[in-house]
Amino acid sequence: MYTIKQIRNFEEAKKEMLAIDVDGGGIPIMAPKSVFKTIKITDVSRTAAIVMKQEMLSVGGDVAVAKGTINAVVDKTDVLIFGTVAQIREFIHKISLQPFGLKKIAKDLDILLTNYHKKLESWQIGKYSPKKYQLNFDLPLIMGIVNVTPDSFFDGSKYASTDAAVKHAKELVKQGADILDIGGESSRPGSESVSTQEELSRVLPVIKKLIADKTINVPISVDTYKPEVAEACLKAGAHIINDISGFKNPRMISVCKKYDAGVIAMHMQGNPKSMQQNPSYDDVVREVFEYLEDTIVNARNLGITKIAIDPGIGFGKSLEHNLLLLKNLAEFKSLGCPILIGTSRKSFIGKISNVDVDKRLPGTIAANCYALLNGANILRVHDVEEAKLTVDVVEGIKKA
Image 1: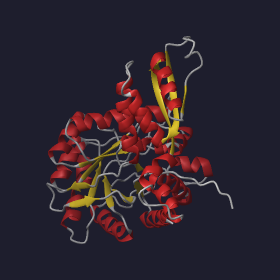
Image 2 (image 1 turned 120 degrees about the vertical axis):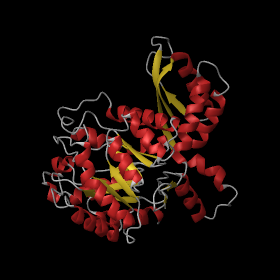
Image 3 (image 1 turned 180 degrees about the vertical axis):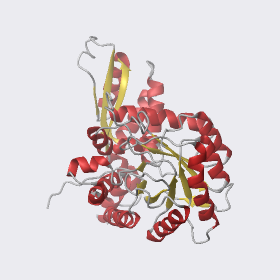
Image 4 (image 1 turned 90 degrees about the horizontal axis):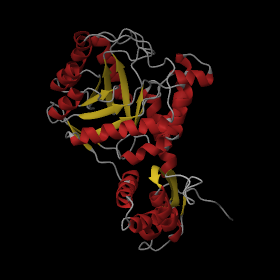
């Protein structure tokens, strides 16, 4: 029998070798030779690109460059590097010894590969909360949505009262939620912003009750872009700030650092009121990636260490933009942070399937399966029980 095996990571390579009883000492040496990668670098000088091609060819891989690079028609080119992880590692060492800016390229490539394959560090959260937790990202986590608003696109006003929201949150925990995300301002397309006081009047009583409730044993996230709301909620015992504006307000970083909070930085083009009015990108994956990369660097420079990222499905994106982000989600793994995906019952599913919001659960499950197979670490959902079953099945298949 002849079969072509799909090896996506080192763990799959190790399992295949163990299955044929390969000597244990050789597995760590051979595993990097079995995983193939294509890496794109933009705006490389012509001289550096030529050296890169020569060095990658020398280790058995290759580099694609723009036509006109070799005969000096162009000064700069994007490059595509093709090779196994082992070949790319050897290539990195070789170019680290070269001039023409290749030392920096080598350093950046080393970080890129390390981030892509590394085990994500767990979060110790709740340093200033009555409840302290460790979030481990070895398995995907489920974030249950609790909208304490009168105008949620799916929940409507079902959980607008404190008691209803707390009851719903407790039910989500029973269904398997690993995190509760409490929001007091709708971010559906076309929605109006609310005042700080109005948002606090909605979410703060809910957070206080959940923190005081001994049956709630999961961390509390707050969906807000207002530093004043974030600080009041963290002071009350919340653990994570989920900022749809991607921490554009520098005060938000200061607040999160003060309380040693976990942070989730999302990409959004525009604001909820106008974001779906003809969103436009030259290259949506590249632009979202670069935005999140800059956000991570800025946050880390200011002392934030617990950072997750969210490409912002449905936030200033067309149907095509959303699909491209999901299709290329694995690229975001090289940023080295947990990846949150929020597809739950969103309009792009309705556009594909031509169904209303109450019939979008199957499409949500399909999108989440794809996201899980391509690097998602947190699923933000309305339907926790179904998401939990989705994770269980996907992980079961991956581990088979």
